[in-house]
Amino acid sequence: MYSMTTTPQEQAQPQVQGHPQRWLILGVICLAQLTVLLDNTILNVAIPSLTSEMNASTSDVQWMMNAYSLVQAGLLLTAGNAADRYGRKLLLMSGLAIFGVGSLVAGLSQSPAQLIAARAGMGVGGALLMTTTLAVVVQIFDDKERVKAIALWSTVSSLGFAAGPLIGGVMLNHFWWGAIFLINIPVAVLGLIAVAALVPESKHKAGDRPDLVGAVLSTIGMTAIVYAIITGPEHGWTSAQVLVAALIGVVVLGLFVTWELRIEHPMLDMHFFRNQKFVGAVAGAILVAFGMTGSLFLLTQHLQFVLGYEPLDAGLRTAPLALTVVALNFTGVGAKLVLKVGTPGAIALGMTLVSAGLAAIALLGGHGYEGMLLGLVVMGAGVALSMPAMANAIMSAIPPEKAGVGAGINGTLAEFGNGLGVAVLGAVLNSRFASLVAVSAASLPAALASADSAAERARISDAFASGLETSQLVGAVAVLAGGLVAAALLRRAERAESA
Image (cartoon, rainbow, N blue to C red; front, side):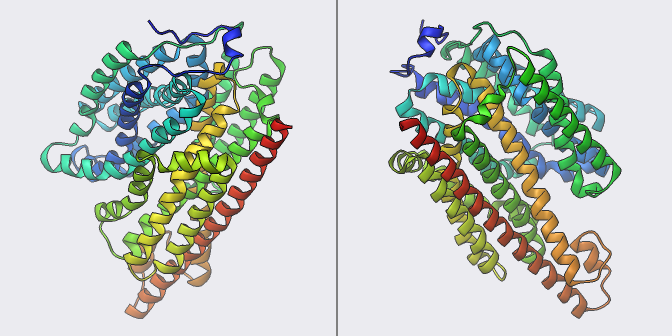
């Protein structure tokens, strides 16, 4: 049997040849990951059904959505570290099993509390899957093919985003809401069988001891920070609830860093941050997530509030972005460009395209979907280039025996970038909107409902559209600047390595 458990001597050697069944294994891994990603987007479509059939309050619905994200974000680093130590195959199978059981409980839930608890359990499985899948990809592919493999792996995120609303809408038209969870079970079972038969075990135990204190501190700190980011738009960024959570997160993460610097076998080696290649990839990964998630947050409001589409129609009209990513990476175009122009060049070009797409949406999409479509396609091309290049840069800057931790870092950065994109660009939108119209309402629908005349409603709508344009342009500038900085850091690191 092909074994991926390596000795220290083997780890010092570059991998010459990938696993003989690597492409089949990649397909299994991507199927497992797609299940996790589809679950989130499908749930968005099911919110009206959950609200009516379970008598769920607004708070219940928010926790149904957030319980998964909070648990997953908090456990990513810990899950990656556990995978490196105890076996990536073992933890991948554990993740599939936990996710499948959580899906069964969620589908049969009789109350909001049961569904929230099930979603939290699914978050544990999701954290294990998101870290182990990327770690296994790094282990089974050699340096030459790894960029293409990571490009296909990252494309699954975009495919999940594009397919989720469509699959959810079709299923809810024919079945009750629980079916959107129960459909995960046969996929999880097939995944378990395929992983057991095909995926080689790989782990690293060279003297490392379990860092239980680090695991607890990172989980508490990350959960608190992500909670503050998620609840900030709802409760207000200066509310006690948000500020206390943010303060706890910052203090605990500070303790985590201090602890990791002091112990012999840290869960996260802080010396990684002295590596210019790693720092450049970290900066870029946050900004790719920032630009993509923040822009999608604005796009859905733009399509619904400015152009007047229904929620499902609005979701489907953002699909060209994801479909462009899928097309470029499944055909191998994205990976070929990364190999041709190099990682720094691919990141610079990709982030420039993301920035140009955002600017095109801001300047051309105000009066119709046709102008927005161009921006979505350009953004998709940029994401297809920059996302796999960034993930590859992070994973290649970390020793192979720490692949699980590297995947955990990659996932954690995406969570930070996602939250920051919504928080920062949402704050710009609200600030611009408030400066143009003197309304006390917290949202556009509420402001329109309080308007006294058609002229005032038109003025409020124009102000909101102006706020969207400003925030999208701010996002474009931030993404462009961040991409150029990340590319410069990576170029500098490559020159230092070659010297």
